[in-house]
Length: 109
Length: 112
Image (cartoon, rainbow over all chains, first blue to last red; front, side, top):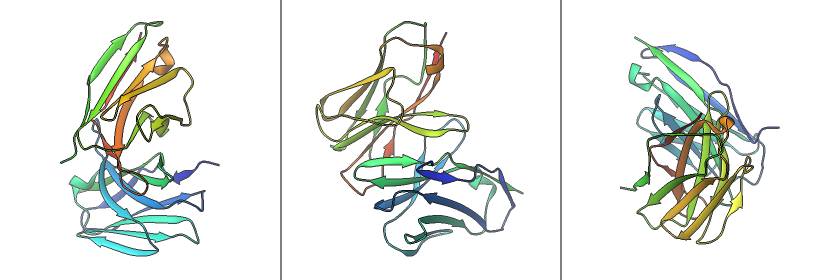
């Protein structure tokens, strides 16, 4: 079983819609959770971090964490074409940072 | 701002060569990581280091070694490059425990 799993996509949404990205992880001891955005040919950049159960909002982005279900999600409201990228879920356990394979998002004008 | 710098953006090497990929960070981070990224496979951890001279194997250490003689520098070594090591290599650094990782710009290595 992979440690961090994401749907590879591609996920396509129209401009202005909500994009929903999901991630599950296998190790119950995981302590911190991150979403990165990666544009083609570029390195990943952090967009959200979340450490406790519940929702965390930052502008158009909301991260949701449910440790009991071992589930992390990212919602992007009012999606823009510039949000088109691959989104990587990352999970940190005792200094060991593991990534999912990423979900490719396309926002169509 | 955190800066993580990888020595080369693009690299072409021949099969059997010994290859050195260098990574330097300027934020006094304890943790440093080497990943490779391949289409459909995401980022796979090769090695990480949580202190000078300390290293831990990740998921795919075979064919690689690392060196961390100074806190700011973490080197990835391909002992004898093979074509299946053609990939994008990403270095990252972070503070201890729960914090996020910051990435370098990546090195696209082609082994011919």
